[in-house]
Length: 110
Image (cartoon, rainbow, N blue to C red; front, top):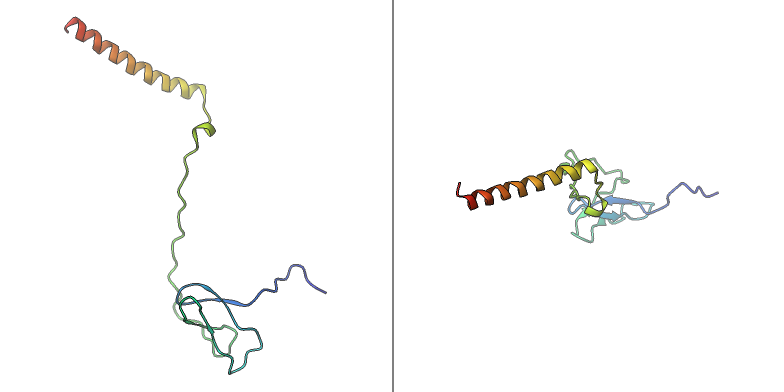
């Protein structure tokens, strides 16, 4: 009976030269079975199913995960409160008041 939770895909390994995923030859493996060759960089890919396989002493250095740019919320999706509107309006009113005072000073000669 088939198990619906068992994946029956091909056996794969990662190429040590270019980090591409390589499909390994089908089993059974014999001594004369050729090694898997990466089609991208033409490097021999070690097959962990062979008895001659040894785990490399040094694994590749961990790479930092790429950081995704943080998107600012669009203006139509921003939440606006009355307090925030009043704070922005007081800044505008203060700027206009200062400019009116400066214009009055220029007119009066102070």
